[in-house]
Length: 436
Image (cartoon, rainbow, N blue to C red):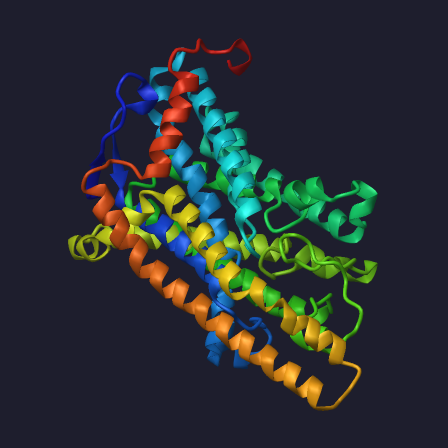
């Protein structure tokens, strides 16, 4: 496979220069683009049981939701497997030092995620859970593919069961503010499920992902998993009804609404009769068995296809800017969250008076209500266009900026600061005995 060299700080086995794997950088870029699309594209729901969804561009945008984040989690495991090869070969003190490096990296990334949570608007930031994935994977760096696959299966089963309990039991039973449940058990990124994605990434990399035969098998396996999962998902969606979140029509009707969390998500207590759907749900971020199988299948297929595609020199030339952005994913992700927050501040927060006007006029069917509806619809069009413009600008500008930056720098600015922070902790620290 064609590679480009990445210059790193010498002095530790974990920091020696390593060749970049082009297909993985391309997959990282696609994962980030998928998450940006899920955050910024104002889409309709993709109903797997409705053929009309296939002809609706707005519905197709929802396809990125969940799948791109799963790919991001899978690639975390791939990265850990790559950086751990040399320390595991050398053995001795390098293994506990590797664990300390990964854990420190995870803590810093999780800290960045907490900060972005305070700055974002209607975006479920993945970095907090992503950091915990690195911490968890640091504990199993010695394990082989079979044991990693087994641990991944167990972690995902635990994740699905925890989501089921969190959905059926009111949050107030667990804790007053619901933070722990939302971040670790339920919410958009249940930590056990994302640890499972990372474990699969480690296992797949250790199967010999540089081999084109393995790449084709990973692609075929992932595509088959996705096909089976979403085919069964269509059956499940037709068999069991499930709770649907209220849309603008319900809001405009003036009916009492449940509380909206700081993530912009509506909390609804699922009736006990819905436990079958919650357990098997194919919906993105649901934590259902078919969601995990389908999302993981898509992630594996995309990773395999990127690796296969990047064996071609023409593809490498065409994707060079994308791979440059994929080589600095933390920087690009931070830029995305911050730019989206700026757009939200300009176009969302200043328009709350339209909502208030609508609610105060909902009891009358006269001109005031009609005017409020017109203003609300105009605001929705305006914000939608702003988000689409930001998405298009981000997809074009981020690869260009990344290409220019990497002409002079081996790492992105956020990646460089992260490496320096980790180096300060691990450079002269003796390996802690508890890490052995």
